[in-house]
Image (cartoon, rainbow, N blue to C red; front, side):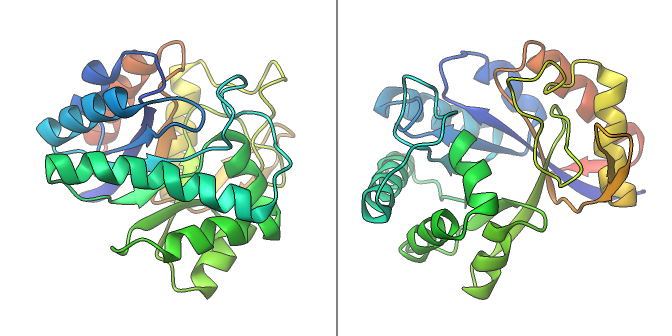
Length: 246
């Protein structure tokens, strides 16, 4: 594993307030841009921090549902969802232009991310929005997902993403947050999951079986109860294994 490169990303600007403590350890961030959380002030604050720490910046658009933090599926006409996602990303791009930093990627949030992974209609909306971006931003996608396939078919550059702090079902969907075992709270379990995915391209699912998976970037949620402690420990242990975080 010597000199291997791993990207660690965290969702930010969601009202948790731990961004300054997380930035020194991560290599990319996903900034809420008004759908489930965030406004111009929070976006500008996080962008400035990311710029200071040379962290790559991504947009984190969502179903427009702050009440449920974007974690419930919404039935929306495609044209309405398209307009909402495009506006959210453009709002962040406005801030990025003010700070003279580029948009590196887009990562859908919550229920939108999960739905686009399996639903062609939703995935197509996300991909159509990506096509409107002036720069070739990358799209963070789950491995072997509908969203990944449609993005590749439309020449959208993708990075496969896996989750450090979430358990997986056998079909590579995330265990629902309504279940007690949705979140990984033990550090050793988290590290083994990340290292196993990166070095062996496999993940142990809640059924006890192993599933093939690939990942270029690993997410730890900013609202994880021990986010700062977990990220710091994960990065330090990966570096001990010869991995570079960037």
